[in-house]
Image 1: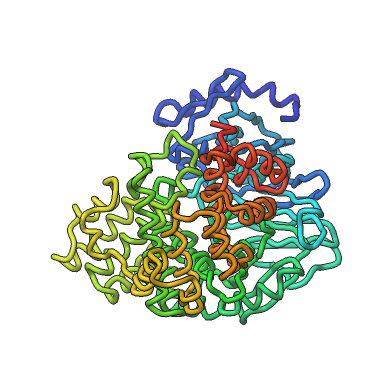
Image 2 (image 1 turned 135 degrees about the vertical axis):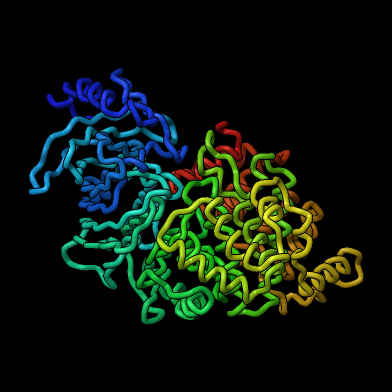
Length: 637
């Protein structure tokens, strides 16, 4: 914080607030001590007292310095006061340099106010506490991010395919506070405007309206998000980007090296939007574009409204991995439109979305592909449930004393999806689709809890269609650990996988040779099932024979290659280990890197080698990837 004379008034202002608020306000009061004790509120991962004062609109004005790796400027927050007499605003920050805070009078002039940063709470950061005078509905904060901001990744020219620097954000679940001071909780939704200035030879894009289709000459870009969003959907990226249209309201942004392949891979994007609308109502966000990020992006995708982020590792040349795009698009309804109010309720975002994704894939590619994906999800979920902590084996989870990053595991995704599958089984597809359309309409642009969903489902499913499912069965799915016994009613099966199992067994028992396996007819999902079933069963000689027949070590489909590299670690297969080294140096997607490092750390031979490779790969990894890799390698707790 930059010192100024008005901060000497802080303790006096705090004492006034204590007197004003103690009588009927149960919120933690400001402490006159220098450390400024502020507790988390309704959302255990945010300091924001949003029930008393909350943001309704935000105006950003930022300069991006690609050399210093900072965003600097100011944000103006338009506020609402559900509790009119409440006279402080608490915002979330983490590693931000707060330079000044001013209230903005109704006539637009500035009024200096007292403010202070509270104690550092690790991954939660520091509360920014601002004295809020009566009659003030707007606050301006001048600030800058730091180069180590967890929610921003800055890549230098050597780390990109274009040979130019690149920056992108990752705000979910609680990293928006590392580049904007705000109420960083999914319970608060707001609209925003932004002006961002970057280098003239790069393009700035945001998850908002106003993205241009080509770079301008000034380096200044203007954006607007007219629909209210939660903070975790704030998104910005800067790079050498070009655009390719895929339809009247959709297209692809990517570095020049990726654009042609990406546009060809995602040419069904407009058709996907049409399918989504046909299933569950109008797409309410204007455009839907994709931004293909560098391979260091730690996730498969991120559902930022109007501009979803996508990893290039799904560009397989045959559209076989488009389920991920269907997933991010589906979030335009489940997650972005109707949002979990806290991370304990993540299944509301992800379970509905995985179900919706399956429905889109079924429309595009048929029930066979849908069933294959469902079996893979079922098997993976059950494997997770066998080893997961007891408190992580149910849909509604207690995360109050944990980093919300731990919410993101298979349970809210796949168990949530199978809960919706179970609803379809009990109520029928027609009834469920009608319910989901009404659900998305009723809760549109709102943040809700699992209990809100349960109350709505009680009225519109349980009581509207008696005898099909009970409230107790709903509650068992939501609150009890593990899959309920009733889940067996919807256990997925795939004839295509049954055939693969037969061929695998015949090959392993010597009935057929490698050349006789009908792999030319297999989908990527059948290949995955085949390789998963060989876990721990291959030796280096057999893998060499398979490589000679199928060239798996040269595989361009990352899902297949990843499993081949896992088998290579188990068998100490030298060509696979050589490919693994380059893979880890090239790819930062957590889905791949974390289990690979974990497998190496658990092997008899690989941990020291893995640590050496990781140290070389680390500069190109996102902080999230670094964090997961270091845990897998035992470098941190």
